Length: 144
Image (cartoon, rainbow, N blue to C red; front, side, top):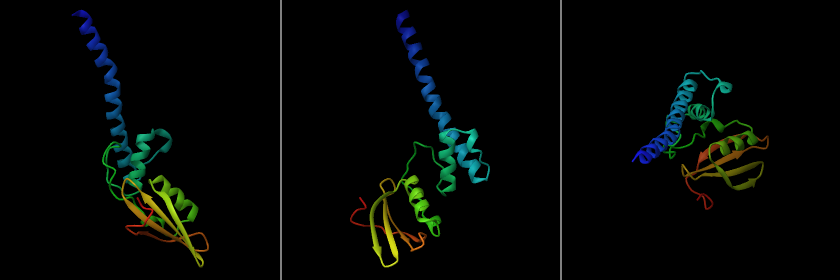
């Protein structure tokens, strides 16, 4: 019986840091979200959960824990006027994958799909490598 008590104590002690880390991660995410929402952000002072919360606030997403439901729509309205290469990087950071590209005249069109949000987005780029529009087109043969 004494061995069982020791085993249970060791098991509880070993499991406690993992449970605490999850809670601490969620608190850091929420703190990052709130700080960035109010313009207070110090990237060098915080870990990844804080930074994810901050990015969510900057992208206009609703506050949620990192392990929460990620089905809300990703922001695309801020892409208009952005350099095409930077827009590609932003789309990638928001979970989009490039699934098609089309050129016509002086314009090029990139089709992007986000499997988590089920968004199919078209970025229209001009001949100066600027995004002239970002539209959720709903569907495309490669958006799946």
